[in-house]
Image (spheres, rainbow, N blue to C red):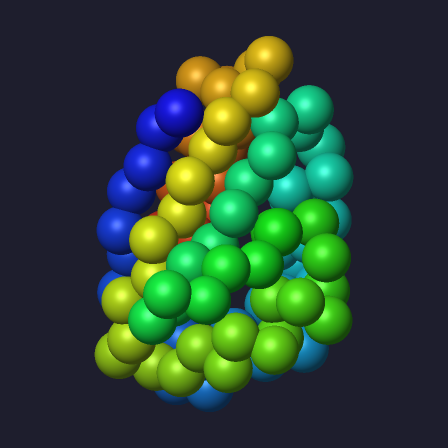
Length: 85
């Protein structure tokens, strides 16, 4: 399992549009990608679960990647967060 922490820079946080893009990105990989904030976790491939975390600008999330294509998924998701969130 690989993990990284990321502080959200998007001024409206993880709302519908970026959450939708994140789900699309996460579904490209076999690995399970989990986003955790304040002890609550959501699978990155599930839109409503992601949005239920209520992540706002300036908050830090932990992203965990585990599975067959872990290395590729980790790099892809980390790059996605830096470019979009």
